[in-house]
Image 1 (cartoon, one colour):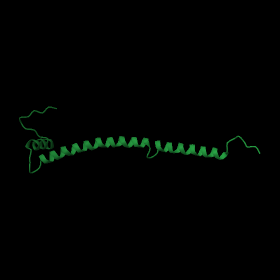
Image 2: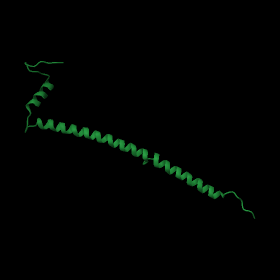
Image 3: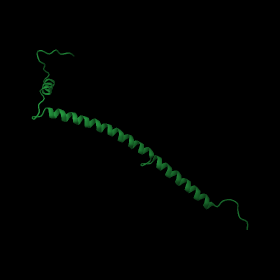
Image 4: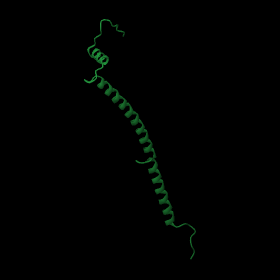
Length: 99
């Protein structure tokens, strides 16, 4: 009884299967739904949304200021005059219009 010098078929299948699974999980860790590339996209999107949030917050503060200045409790006559002129399209007699 002589023993063959070639490796057993079971060992080959085990290592092939192990290599295949390692390749699959590595690919999933990089390219998958929760992989590294998706994480980079989420971080970039979060940064863009943070900038947009800051823009919206500054616009809200500006509108709150204008609303408060035109309220019944506090009336800014200069702002009221500016708004009335822009809506009605009128000027005073002593003003010069430059286009």
